[in-house]
Image (cartoon, rainbow, N blue to C red; front, side, top):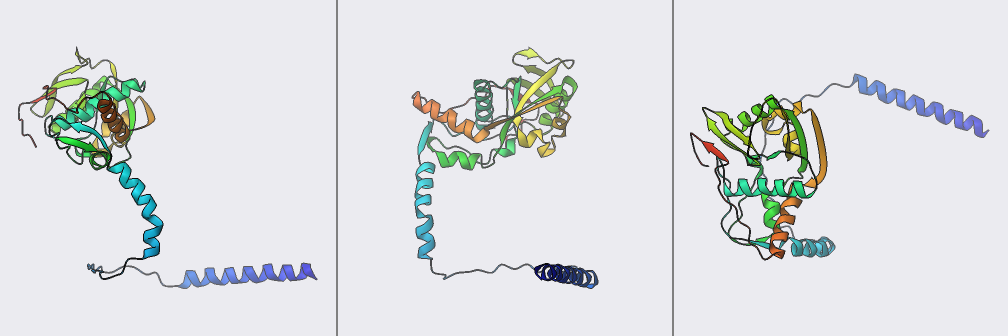
Length: 257
């Protein structure tokens, strides 16, 4: 008897499923014909004390961490082109932290517009670094043929500069010339390894040249964590955070931004 009931239940389920599929196939296809967006202001809604009580301990913990002073900036650190104090600071931190964590590379490159905020002179709170670097970007090393490295520098030159470290060059007629890598003249017949971030290594900001990598290594070290670690290290040594303009990128058309 139980076997018969089980069989009937299965048959009933199959019939219902077949009916639903048939109705779905016969139903008309709906297509959006217009869109009318509007902003609706919601106000005068009382706070839910239960919700506030639930997240308050987490908020206090996060506020405590974000408001912690982790270092002191000696000067205002801002991004500029072809090079700026903030550009050079972040690229140099990448270089130093990359070497400290045993990554193998020749020079550093990251994107100018990835620096989302400046650092004002004075105490630096942890929250400021999250404002500067809100993205979960990881260190990546990319090995390129020399001809592609030249294309990478031309890409940077066309943008009138990006943050770099371990490299120097001049922008002439929108191209990179007089390239030096770690004090040595660039050799287009050699391979070079660039330390960058995963966003750029994936071809972000139209840096398609990175997608032609000969080799690639993805680390688990975030750029934001590298900056936080560097600033805390400097504070522990009683040093302030500063940077310098050293003409690592020179431009015949220096339109600082």
